Image (cartoon, rainbow, N blue to C red; front, top):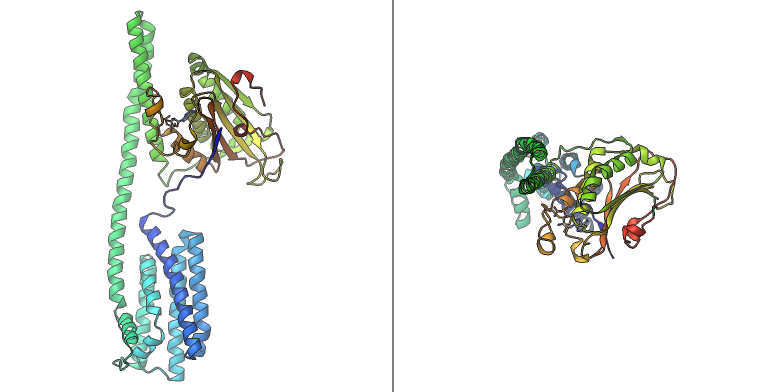
Length: 463
Ligand code: ADP
């Protein structure tokens, strides 16, 4: 038997487009600037070139830059705050350099002060690129204020130094507003493109909502009419035609449901609606609904529910749990031709043993085990990807879109749970959904369907 614990899906970007780029830039620029500051400080310290102000301020500025990089790594959404902190630290350092230079009257021109603060324009440049518009304006103003202060205090003396690097830093100090302007313009263009992208995303959403409504509603009435027609027809060929009609309409409805559901899960506005749920009832109801379908296919459908009060008040989203269970059950029915299906709802104890009510403690395990065609070990990692179907090769007549398990995978992730699958080709599969259980009181047994060998259902005893 092969066992596979499905890793969480790669979520869509935590921040939309440009914000994500800004977060990345803030992270890397502040880290590089921190390293750069410390290297320059270290070299100057060894050469005895650091003023008292520089020897205290530069390590502090580096610490702020480093902390900002870590903060953005930890929470990308903090990028504006982090870039603001970097700009503030750079501005404080610049002003301090200005004051200390005027006090000790060593630097007498903008050129000299500029060469004293070599790396700061780069920090400013980073801040302009990474900050969103309002904060960037502030950064601009502080830069201009300092430039005017320098010029007023010292005047702009022409550079006399032969040091090419000093010329470079001076040129950068004077020209970086132009570079920033160009970058800001690129930023504005980029945000316009992102807005267009968002617009097209919402257009796609609207189209799918329309598709869902405009096609599924008439489809429902078509299915109702087919049922009515079924009562009237007598002849065998007509009945077969009606059965076929019902079947294809059902397939069409399932396809539409899968596609709309999968696309909806991409929407950042998609939300869960957690509430206390009587899970035993939900599971029993789902089994009862599919019982006629199982019987029609000559399969046994058993439902084993642990007697555990905590299961009756689990805090979760009932619609989504039902959707997960129904998808797994439909697959089990689809890919099983003999034997049966067992649905088990039980507790799974946390790592510290049963009775642990912490979020990482006891969980609920909902499994759907079948005696169907099973899945080869090498295919287990692929079946949760969208539009992946193994049926193309092995069972050409099984209908499907290849989206069912992709939807299950994402839903389980959104519910804060984990998905496991155990399968033996030609013997069957067991899909287990482990969900956190919030309001928990007591401990219970933990049948782990995945770790037991699959047995024919006729031998299976209730847990
Ligand atoms: P489909 O619409 O093809 O059923 P799914 O995403 O639900 O799409 O499943 C992906 C593939 O995983 C299926 O094509 C099938 O090969 C395999 N699969 C899913 N559930 C089972 C199962 N219970 N038994 C055997 N194979 C399964």
